[in-house]
Image (cartoon, rainbow, N blue to C red; front, side, top):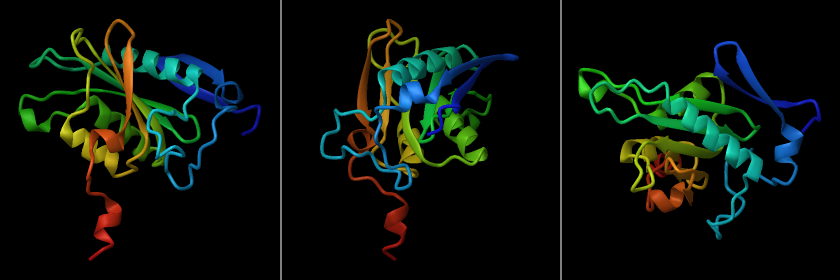
Length: 183
């Protein structure tokens, strides 16, 4: 990547955080053209650098503040990292007609796809749940699976601790686009 590239995430209207991509991407070897995690056999190895993980964790916490959840009172934020270093945030948005609400993870994915990004490396998720790590629901796991099965999902607690799993670990024996080619 060029030295002049920047990772940009809008924090609030008019406020932009810029981090040189070369700082956080230098040690990452990742085949974005295939959309596959380079360490499929070792799901504990992460292709995401420490600085990017911390940024994802901070962005998902910030996104949680924008959640619209007047019914469940369960705010969730997500931060999605694309292969070229862009981050898209998302929050849950509820609706009085409950099935029409959308989770934070799908909001972030839809924002990225609407901007032309479909290759993802990682996602971080935050909520106010203190006893357990926040995990994506089944619908979100299936939407994530549309794009790859081997990217990293960072599931957090408010105290800053997190666990990381690949989507393959969260959704084993999954159904994806390649399965439709069998017919």
